[in-house]
Length: 453
Image: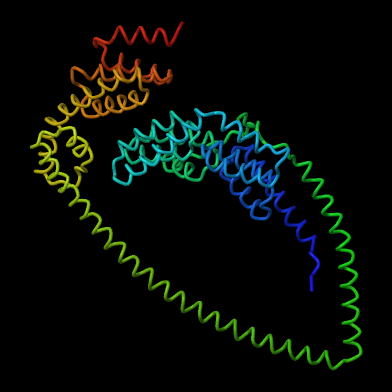
């Protein structure tokens, strides 16, 4: 026997899918791209053939740099509707832009390399890779977030905040970016712009407007109105039959009263049992809290002892590196030591290393930076590596004969990659900190060019 299909249920499911699409559309227009993704995915759970949801979800993924996921949803959309479908236009635009696809492939490759570097606790190498990624693919939100994490772990909050601002400019409500922002600015709530974005998500939204969905809603409500009228009529008839049954057979009322009394007694017993169980659970929770407090105290003591042992291990490792004259490897370890955990003898040794190892390391990093800077004219990634090396040189010493040159080169790198504001700040800092530098005239000349009167 074949049962008739309940079309009202199907229509209701489609209506829910359309409402979720409208919600995702509004979130996308407000730059809440993470929220838009969640709404559109729910829309497709209700109606996987909703091509507008597929198309918009593809545009949102494209906006945050996930081109592979964008193409996936456009392909699904094109399978559901072969004609008059914007998905074909989007796919054609992406396929014709070979350079963007190449950048995406290179960015994903470097992103995976950065993740491996982080897993191996090589934050410096991860930072270099991620800096190259965001130059290649500025909309790669996850790369900006990972770049911020590297900067946080390296103790550079200014750089972390800059990366987070870049991520939030693309996706205003990205949860991981907001968490990092709250970590960096715990007493400040980041303002979110209310301007309508003028970027690709708004410009490229499929031509499936709220008005279309509202018409569908009105038709749906009309169908439901007729069904509701029939339902009310049937319900009234059933109630009338039940009332007649009670009037004709009064004994039924007494039976119902007895059943109600029994149910109330059972409910009272269940309530008492629940209260007893709650009291037992509270006692168990209190005991577990006491045990947890004891464990936390023990763990804190063990953690402090482990930190002290880690610092001692670093000292041993540094001693070996210094003996092998690997000062560029020893310097970061010396910089990372927590001197508050050292005894007086170890603190004296640490101070001696600062005086002897830091200047040598600064010179090595400076020389490596110069080599990368000279190669930067043909490879922009070399500029990023050179900037990092010059900054490392200045971290370990700012009073060497080459320190002013290192700062000058940092300014030149910012200028060469189009970061004019940062370049001006560096040149002004150079003239302030090194008034007698041999780069004084060069810095002034560049400032005059960048800040015309």
